[in-house]
Length: 227
Image (cartoon, rainbow, N blue to C red; front, side, top):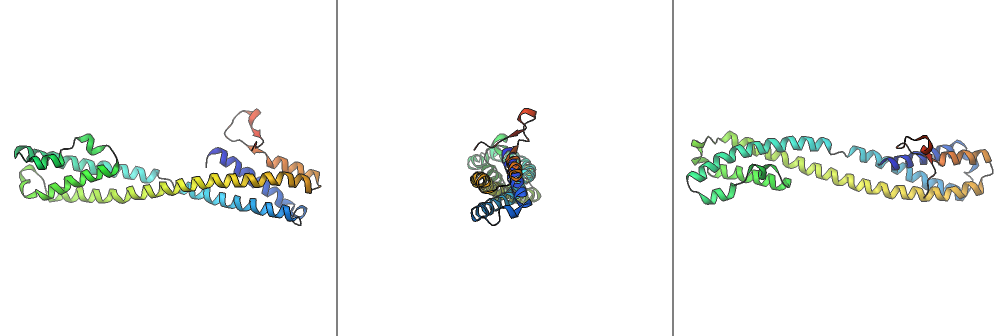
Protein backbone atom coordinates (compact mmCIF):
# COMPACT_ATOMS: atom_id res chain seq x y z
CA UNK A 1 0.00 0.00 0.00
CA UNK A 2 1.18 3.52 -0.67
CA UNK A 3 1.17 6.16 2.07
CA UNK A 4 -2.15 7.66 1.02
CA UNK A 5 -3.80 4.24 1.12
CA UNK A 6 -2.32 3.54 4.55
CA UNK A 7 -3.65 6.89 5.76
CA UNK A 8 -7.12 6.10 4.44
CA UNK A 9 -7.16 2.66 6.04
CA UNK A 10 -6.11 4.16 9.37
CA UNK A 11 -9.02 6.60 9.14
CA UNK A 12 -11.52 3.83 8.27
CA UNK A 13 -10.38 1.87 11.32
CA UNK A 14 -10.67 4.96 13.55
CA UNK A 15 -14.25 5.52 12.36
CA UNK A 16 -15.20 1.91 13.07
CA UNK A 17 -13.57 2.06 16.51
CA UNK A 18 -15.63 5.15 17.32
CA UNK A 19 -18.84 3.53 16.10
CA UNK A 20 -18.10 0.41 18.14
CA UNK A 21 -17.69 2.53 21.27
CA UNK A 22 -21.42 3.40 21.22
CA UNK A 23 -23.24 0.69 19.24
CA UNK A 24 -26.54 1.45 20.95
CA UNK A 25 -26.73 4.71 19.02
CA UNK A 26 -26.89 2.98 15.65
CA UNK A 27 -27.43 -0.79 15.88
CA UNK A 28 -31.20 -0.49 15.68
CA UNK A 29 -31.09 1.59 12.50
CA UNK A 30 -31.29 -0.59 9.37
CA UNK A 31 -29.65 2.00 7.05
CA UNK A 32 -26.77 2.57 9.46
CA UNK A 33 -26.14 -1.11 10.25
CA UNK A 34 -26.15 -1.95 6.54
CA UNK A 35 -23.56 0.69 5.62
CA UNK A 36 -21.39 0.03 8.69
CA UNK A 37 -21.38 -3.71 7.93
CA UNK A 38 -20.31 -3.00 4.35
CA UNK A 39 -17.58 -0.58 5.49
CA UNK A 40 -16.31 -3.11 8.03
CA UNK A 41 -16.14 -5.79 5.33
CA UNK A 42 -14.05 -3.53 3.10
CA UNK A 43 -11.72 -2.65 6.00
CA UNK A 44 -11.17 -6.28 7.03
CA UNK A 45 -10.43 -7.26 3.43
CA UNK A 46 -8.12 -4.27 2.98
CA UNK A 47 -6.16 -5.24 6.07
CA UNK A 48 -5.78 -8.80 4.80
CA UNK A 49 -4.73 -7.65 1.33
CA UNK A 50 -2.16 -5.24 2.77
CA UNK A 51 -0.59 -8.12 4.70
CA UNK A 52 -0.55 -10.27 1.57
CA UNK A 53 1.04 -7.46 -0.42
CA UNK A 54 3.74 -6.99 2.22
CA UNK A 55 4.51 -10.71 2.16
CA UNK A 56 4.82 -10.80 -1.63
CA UNK A 57 8.21 -9.12 -1.77
CA UNK A 58 10.54 -10.20 -4.58
CA UNK A 59 13.69 -8.54 -3.22
CA UNK A 60 15.05 -11.68 -1.55
CA UNK A 61 14.31 -13.82 -4.58
CA UNK A 62 15.81 -11.22 -6.91
CA UNK A 63 19.04 -10.94 -4.91
CA UNK A 64 19.39 -14.72 -4.69
CA UNK A 65 18.63 -15.11 -8.38
CA UNK A 66 21.08 -12.36 -9.38
CA UNK A 67 23.87 -14.06 -7.46
CA UNK A 68 23.14 -17.41 -9.08
CA UNK A 69 22.81 -15.80 -12.50
CA UNK A 70 26.26 -14.28 -12.13
CA UNK A 71 27.73 -17.63 -11.12
CA UNK A 72 26.05 -19.35 -14.07
CA UNK A 73 27.37 -16.73 -16.49
CA UNK A 74 30.89 -16.99 -15.05
CA UNK A 75 30.89 -20.74 -15.60
CA UNK A 76 29.41 -20.42 -19.09
CA UNK A 77 31.88 -17.77 -20.23
CA UNK A 78 34.85 -19.75 -18.95
CA UNK A 79 33.63 -22.76 -20.92
CA UNK A 80 32.84 -20.63 -23.96
CA UNK A 81 36.44 -19.42 -24.25
CA UNK A 82 37.70 -22.99 -24.39
CA UNK A 83 35.11 -24.19 -26.91
CA UNK A 84 35.56 -21.14 -29.11
CA UNK A 85 39.32 -21.67 -29.19
CA UNK A 86 38.74 -25.23 -30.34
CA UNK A 87 36.25 -24.09 -33.01
CA UNK A 88 38.61 -21.44 -34.42
CA UNK A 89 41.66 -23.71 -34.53
CA UNK A 90 39.70 -26.47 -36.25
CA UNK A 91 37.78 -24.11 -38.52
CA UNK A 92 34.50 -25.50 -37.21
CA UNK A 93 32.26 -22.71 -38.44
CA UNK A 94 29.01 -24.38 -37.38
CA UNK A 95 30.20 -24.71 -33.79
CA UNK A 96 31.66 -21.22 -33.77
CA UNK A 97 28.36 -19.79 -35.04
CA UNK A 98 26.40 -21.65 -32.36
CA UNK A 99 28.40 -20.37 -29.40
CA UNK A 100 30.07 -17.18 -30.60
CA UNK A 101 28.61 -14.89 -27.92
CA UNK A 102 30.41 -11.89 -26.50
CA UNK A 103 30.78 -11.70 -22.73
CA UNK A 104 28.17 -8.93 -22.60
CA UNK A 105 25.69 -11.11 -24.55
CA UNK A 106 26.08 -13.86 -21.97
CA UNK A 107 25.59 -11.50 -19.03
CA UNK A 108 22.97 -9.07 -20.34
CA UNK A 109 19.55 -9.18 -21.91
CA UNK A 110 16.29 -10.98 -21.08
CA UNK A 111 16.82 -13.70 -18.49
CA UNK A 112 15.41 -16.45 -20.67
CA UNK A 113 17.89 -15.58 -23.44
CA UNK A 114 20.82 -15.60 -21.02
CA UNK A 115 19.76 -18.99 -19.66
CA UNK A 116 19.29 -20.39 -23.18
CA UNK A 117 22.73 -19.17 -24.28
CA UNK A 118 24.36 -20.78 -21.25
CA UNK A 119 22.47 -23.99 -21.99
CA UNK A 120 23.69 -23.92 -25.59
CA UNK A 121 27.28 -23.53 -24.44
CA UNK A 122 26.86 -26.47 -22.09
CA UNK A 123 25.25 -28.62 -24.76
CA UNK A 124 27.99 -27.91 -27.28
CA UNK A 125 30.64 -28.65 -24.68
CA UNK A 126 28.96 -31.98 -24.01
CA UNK A 127 28.62 -32.71 -27.74
CA UNK A 128 32.33 -32.05 -28.46
CA UNK A 129 33.64 -33.32 -25.15
CA UNK A 130 35.86 -35.97 -26.74
CA UNK A 131 37.71 -33.29 -28.72
CA UNK A 132 37.97 -30.71 -25.95
CA UNK A 133 40.30 -32.48 -23.53
CA UNK A 134 43.34 -30.55 -24.74
CA UNK A 135 41.41 -27.34 -24.14
CA UNK A 136 40.91 -28.26 -20.48
CA UNK A 137 37.18 -28.88 -20.68
CA UNK A 138 36.15 -31.40 -18.04
CA UNK A 139 33.03 -33.31 -17.09
CA UNK A 140 33.05 -31.47 -13.78
CA UNK A 141 32.84 -28.10 -15.54
CA UNK A 142 29.87 -29.26 -17.58
CA UNK A 143 28.17 -30.68 -14.49
CA UNK A 144 28.67 -27.45 -12.53
CA UNK A 145 27.29 -25.34 -15.36
CA UNK A 146 24.21 -27.53 -15.76
CA UNK A 147 23.63 -27.44 -12.02
CA UNK A 148 23.85 -23.64 -12.08
CA UNK A 149 21.38 -23.45 -14.99
CA UNK A 150 18.95 -25.75 -13.21
CA UNK A 151 19.20 -23.60 -10.08
CA UNK A 152 18.43 -20.34 -11.85
CA UNK A 153 15.34 -21.51 -13.75
CA UNK A 154 13.01 -22.10 -10.76
CA UNK A 155 14.19 -18.94 -9.01
CA UNK A 156 13.27 -16.85 -12.04
CA UNK A 157 9.87 -18.53 -12.34
CA UNK A 158 9.16 -18.13 -8.61
CA UNK A 159 10.16 -14.47 -8.61
CA UNK A 160 7.91 -13.79 -11.62
CA UNK A 161 4.98 -15.60 -9.98
CA UNK A 162 5.34 -13.56 -6.79
CA UNK A 163 5.60 -10.31 -8.75
CA UNK A 164 2.44 -11.19 -10.68
CA UNK A 165 0.53 -12.00 -7.49
CA UNK A 166 1.69 -8.76 -5.86
CA UNK A 167 0.48 -6.78 -8.88
CA UNK A 168 -2.95 -8.40 -8.59
CA UNK A 169 -3.16 -7.62 -4.86
CA UNK A 170 -2.09 -4.02 -5.50
CA UNK A 171 -4.90 -3.59 -8.02
CA UNK A 172 -7.37 -5.13 -5.56
CA UNK A 173 -6.31 -2.69 -2.84
CA UNK A 174 -7.12 0.28 -5.08
CA UNK A 175 -10.59 -1.11 -5.74
CA UNK A 176 -11.18 -1.82 -2.04
CA UNK A 177 -10.10 1.71 -1.08
CA UNK A 178 -12.64 3.11 -3.55
CA UNK A 179 -15.35 0.83 -2.20
CA UNK A 180 -14.66 1.82 1.41
CA UNK A 181 -14.63 5.50 0.43
CA UNK A 182 -18.07 5.15 -1.15
CA UNK A 183 -19.47 3.54 2.01
CA UNK A 184 -18.01 6.15 4.35
CA UNK A 185 -19.40 8.93 2.17
CA UNK A 186 -22.85 7.39 2.72
CA UNK A 187 -22.10 7.15 6.42
CA UNK A 188 -21.39 10.89 6.69
CA UNK A 189 -25.00 11.83 5.90
CA UNK A 190 -26.46 8.97 7.90
CA UNK A 191 -24.55 9.96 11.04
CA UNK A 192 -25.56 13.59 10.66
CA UNK A 193 -29.19 12.76 9.85
CA UNK A 194 -30.07 9.84 12.12
CA UNK A 195 -28.00 10.29 15.28
CA UNK A 196 -29.00 12.95 17.81
CA UNK A 197 -25.97 12.79 20.13
CA UNK A 198 -23.95 15.89 19.20
CA UNK A 199 -20.83 14.80 21.09
CA UNK A 200 -20.84 11.49 19.22
CA UNK A 201 -21.22 13.33 15.90
CA UNK A 202 -18.35 15.68 16.72
CA UNK A 203 -16.08 12.79 17.65
CA UNK A 204 -17.12 11.02 14.46
CA UNK A 205 -16.01 14.07 12.50
CA UNK A 206 -12.62 13.93 14.20
CA UNK A 207 -12.24 10.22 13.45
CA UNK A 208 -13.36 10.92 9.89
CA UNK A 209 -10.33 13.13 9.31
CA UNK A 210 -7.27 11.60 7.72
CA UNK A 211 -3.83 12.07 9.22
CA UNK A 212 -1.32 12.46 6.41
CA UNK A 213 1.76 10.83 7.87
CA UNK A 214 3.72 11.73 4.74
CA UNK A 215 3.58 15.49 5.44
CA UNK A 216 5.71 17.10 8.13
CA UNK A 217 4.18 20.57 8.06
CA UNK A 218 1.97 21.24 11.10
CA UNK A 219 -0.40 23.25 8.91
CA UNK A 220 -1.00 20.18 6.72
CA UNK A 221 -0.93 17.50 9.38
CA UNK A 222 -4.65 16.85 9.13
CA UNK A 223 -6.92 17.11 6.13
CA UNK A 224 -10.43 16.06 5.31
CA UNK A 225 -10.85 13.47 2.60
CA UNK A 226 -12.00 15.47 -0.40
CA UNK A 227 -13.48 12.63 -2.41
